[in-house]
Each structure stands twice: as structure tokens, then as C-alpha cells.
Image 1: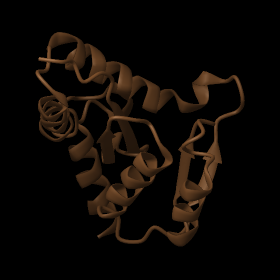
Image 2: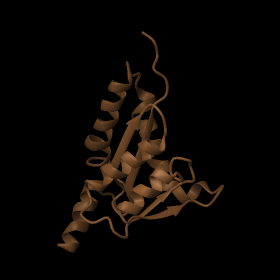
Image 3: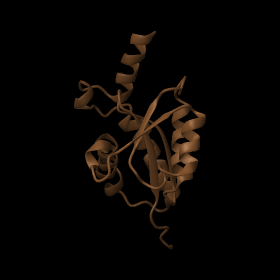
Length: 152
């Protein structure tokens, strides 16, 4: 069996709850993959007007296609400062945890199996069962539910 090579995950996190609200998986990190992650995140948000989306300065996030997507959805774009990895620390932390708790522990037969495992990790573990000290030792789903009760 021939190895398929690298795969990529573009993710969108709600910083209040630390919940991964949108993501897209593919064989290359492109503007289209980043746009798909945002579009998927928007499926979970009632009103996108005025939301601030923070990203690093990767070419997929500085592309015209990505900017056009954000403009259509009236999302404001915030960038990391050049050479400052701490600006995007929450996303960097999520991807690091995903690798340590899932990716590095398994050998996937193909990208389809890896995609399924990442889906199960995010939806079944990270968002619903993994507690975070930064949000009072709640899961992202519990924190989101708590915030939604405040606005109801």
C-alpha cells in the first residue's frame, strides 16, 4: 500500500468557550480549505456580523478568497503580529494537543481513516469531554451552554 502523505486541518475556535466550531480537512493547506473551515463554523453561529476572526499570516489566510469569504459574512479579520507566535496561542495549543492526544498515538491506513479519527476526537472528546483550566475546568460544550443561558 502506498502512503498518501501529509494531510492538513484548518480549524476555527470560539475563544470564549474554547470550542472548535468549524474545521476542514484536506491534502493541502489552501485558501479553499481555510474558507471551508470558516463556512463550516458559520453553520454553528446565528449571526456572523461583527465577529472577529483571528488568524496567523499564512498565505491561505491572507488570500483574496479568504478575505472575500469574511467580507460576505461581515466577519472582521485580525492578524498575528509578524514573528509573534503567542498571538495565535489558543489555536497552536489545540493543534498541539490534537497531535499529542490523537495523531501521534495512531497509524492511519489512509486519509479517510485519519479524517474519521479527527472528527471523533474533536466532536466526541475535545469539545464534549476534555476539560480546560482556562474556562473553569469545564468542557468547551459546557462553557458554550453556560454562555448561551446568559443570553437567553
